[in-house]
Image 1 (tube, helix red, strand yellow):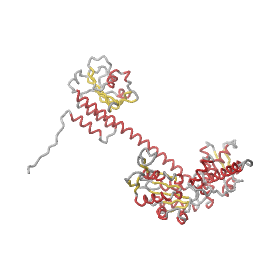
Image 2 (cartoon, helix red, strand yellow):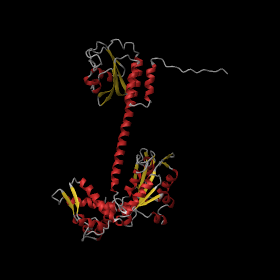
Image 3 (cartoon, rainbow, N blue to C red):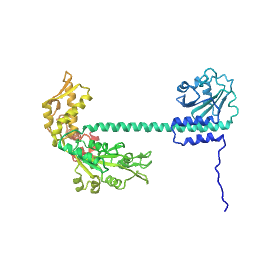
Image 4 (cartoon, rainbow, N blue to C red):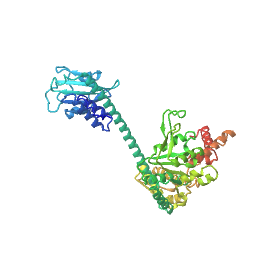
Length: 518
């Protein structure tokens, strides 16, 4: 068999610059490099002394890069109505050549480096378009009046088409980079805010120190963490600290409140959906697990998760794969799971409301947060911590807490735990600030509003129940009171508020809507 030798075909000299521009369209270059390489390639075809690449934006031509031009020429913006040559270029669909004796002033006369007084003699301009849309212009100037006479018009049209595509591509890349930078900044600020909020995990008691030690122990691992404790003890803050102290701290921390998820949309919220998967799914959307890839997902109120979704969640934890609703394509995700609940999940398992296999999968490392009444020695620290936060919030000079107020706070039952004491201190500081004429705001026992409220730190709504009227109206008012009281007891967990009244969550929401309770 005869051996065949294959030799590469070299492009002809005029095509080399065009080939370079085409290759740069897909190269991983920054915008400035793209613009400069475009002008360099153009010079191999067009023997210019000065050139400028301009973007058309908001009816202005804005220089992006230049060769042979003074810096002042590249810092301005050019309105076509004030520069007839530029206007002629962008209104044309073909390259425009201006004769050496053209009466139209050139915007770059006197702007060529080293030639202050001498006007430009030869000028061509290329309108740069993406389809029919004008995206910019490329101008080339030469001192020699006949420098551009030999140029092939078809070659110039090809150059203009490629340059237009290059400019459009660079603009799109810049837009994507700006969006990515913006989102990165948003995520960074959110994470900084979350880190700042972890300061609310304050205490020195044995129970508090044991909890902190457990957080530090498990954070560096990838074990799933189950945080348990009463409403208001700070389960979210513990989850944030686990993430902050982990090797994933630079990745997303995505929080999902399982108690607030509508059951019919919960799977889409977790795993995403494809376009047209259900009514209202206009476009594809990533779920929380996909967004959290590489980071941590925090499933708050995991005990409220319906049994149907518990099975789907278990499959994800076992396989590490999620599948969008309406899609047959699985996606692998690398997510660290932290869950929290104020329910006794072992009891829920025994009564058939929570899957045993999911419970054991979640409880890789359980952390129980003790209620405030079991660590009263932390109350003075928390009081001063929240008082300082209130001082900054209300722009006060100084906040002092009386001994009587501190004693009242230490003896209070605090059914709402740390969240409740924070709300009480904030409200009391504001009240005290209106009654303290000097620089020192003294927080007294009467500002706390706890004396006549041995079991709750919120005002009773019984006074709103009418003592007259028909039975229906008075019953409705009483129902309204009970619901409001339950919501005040569980301000951030409507499912718990419903359970407190012995109602199913969906019935509770319907009753709230009927009674105009938002």
